[in-house]
Length: 341
Image (cartoon, rainbow, N blue to C red; front, top):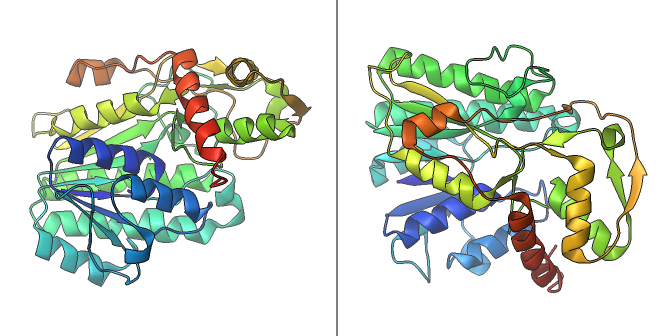
C-alpha cells in the first residue's frame, strides 16, 4: 500500500505501525522546509530510511530496518511520476496524509496549499481511479467546521464557511473525493483530525511551541487571552482509528455510496490555559505567558462528535490528556537535548 506524508507526524507513526504489523508499505514525502527538515529526517531514521540515501528525486529507498518498507522523495503535484509509481507498484490501498499543513501559514503562502492540497490530491484521485485502488483514505481536518458555535462538531453539520485557506482546501478534498466516489465507485474515506499531539509532533504546533518556550524560559504567546479550547487527541489514538478505518471500506450501501467521513478526536476539549498548566506540571517549570487577541484564521473551539466512528469501527480515542502529555514531555526533553529541534 501507499502512505503519503511519511516524513510527517501522523504519516510517520502510521507507517511504523503498518510495517511493524507486516504490511508492505511504500512511503512518500517531499520533505519540504515548512518546518525544520532535521525532524523529518529523524523520523525517517526511526524507520530505517537514512538521509544520505535520499539523494535522487523519485528513487525508491529500501529501509535498513524493515524489509517491507521503502520510501521515495517526490511531490504529489508531479503527475507523471505519480502515474508511473502507481502502475509499477500496483497498490491496493492508499492513505494520503501528505499536505501543506498549518492554518496561519496558509495566509502567508496560499499558493503552496493549492499546489499540494488541491493539485496533489487531484493527482491521487486520478491515479486511484485508473489503478483499481480498493480504498483511498485521506486526511481532512477539524478546521472545516470553521467558527461554528454548535458543539460537538458532527459529520452531519454543514461545513460551508471555512475561515482559512487551509480549511477550504480540506473541504475541497472532501468534495472532490465525493465526486470520484459517485462517478467512478472509488471507495473513499475522509478523516477529520482534531489537534493531534504526541512524540515526534510538529514543531509549529502548540505542544512543541509551549514545551520549547517553557524549557528555554521564553514567553508563550497565548491567543484570545487563553479563551480557546482544543480537542487534543493523542497520536496513538489517531493511528488506531486510521488502521481500523482502512479496513472499513465504504460500499454502495452507504448514505453516499462508496463515500464516508469520520471525525477522529478525543471528545474532551481542553481550555488552552489548562493545557499549559498541565504542561508546566509535566516539565516542572512555570511558563511565562503573553496574552494576545484572537489570531486571524483561528477558531475558538474544536470538539469532536465521534459517535459515527464508534458505530462504524467500534473505536473511540481514550488517552487522557495527562497521560498523553507525560509521554510527549518525556520524548521532547530527550529529543531536544540532541538539539534536533
